[in-house]
Length: 428
Ligand code: GDP
Ligand code: IMO
Ligand code: MG
Image (cartoon, rainbow, N blue to C red; front, side):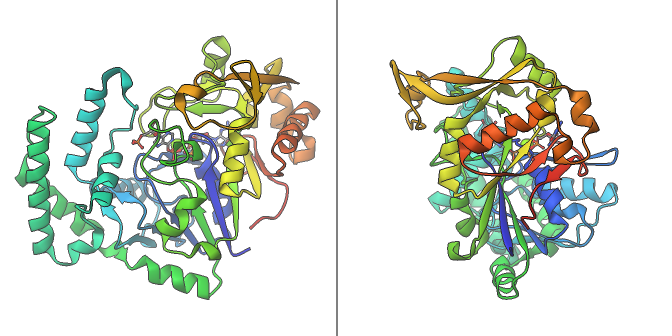
């Protein structure tokens, strides 16, 4: 297999970073194709936790080529901070490449993100306030500024100044906010662009050569399928395509070259931000899972909403992405519960349905239909050296998911570390 996609099958934070890091050892190239520093991918190696936002998780292997594709929106200040953070931890970032077609996030995107959320009041999306939506909007509106624009610094500055003025107009007149300091934004943008300019390259050429040479490429999704701008729980979504549908356009590879996609699935469901969540647990069990799984956002520190596994949603996700297998994570977190529920269908107005509705109004009227699975103990999970050593009930839970999804769980993860991973089939 020369290329493999790893993406979130739920609402993000499934453990994509951990699985990418696990598989990246064999990869020649690790590529991010969408999202921005709204992503927070945690990889634990020994006693060190690495928190990655823009840089692909493959960077933790010294010298591994890591690509930020054109579909990613890049905040130069965040990227410089992340590179410094990695360098301070002894990680070499010389192998990083940024697409010259990637769009740039400026402070006005962040300010507009914040003001829009404020204006939405009760109906706010709960964005990460990283300027993601406003930057993608400029891209589609054709007023964005790209990495390649920095080749001509003078023209770059002129365009940036024009954008700041037009956004300040909007900020003051429409959002009733305070104008941003033009000189400061320009000064900082030039400083941080200077610092990252050595990484900017024509990623299309890199991808073309990688395909020609049959290099092993790993695509690392950010966010998750249900946060996709088209296929997620709109408008409570992000502004990009975390699904396989976004790879060709976001990484500069023909869709006909893509070979296989693995969906990362958390053994239960979490969501940060607002929007309907059919299997959400509001009481004690939800709180217990949050504490046991340390379900707090990597990027914003917000508590994640927790609930049972939802097979209606996962079947939708598997079909849409064309998944060939899943990587099931955080099985250990569910340990010590007496019984565990899996949602197998929804009840809508007295009828049983097995499809995932597009309308949020309809979705919020859906009630979960559950089956119960018997629990297992953490001690027994911790003792396991191979998949077969896992407690019988834990394996029965995995088997039930495989059965309900019609896909194998080729990877099962029982802890945040690399060695707490069972690869049941050689997939890459
Ligand atoms: P991502 O955004 O999909 O990369 O996921 P996050 O990094 O935001 O959240 C997943 C969290 O769970 C991280 O803190 C991981 O270190 C951790 N993690 C990943 N796999 C496992 C697992 O199997 N068990 C446990 N206990 N933690 C895990
Ligand atoms: P990773 O890659 C979980 C959510 C936000 C909000 C919505 C829109 O770590 O899985 P945005 O700032 O993108 O405009 O916010 O999307 N969101 C995530 N939730 N994991 C993420 O990334 C997310 N990135 C964005 O909470 O609901
Ligand atoms: Mg995350």
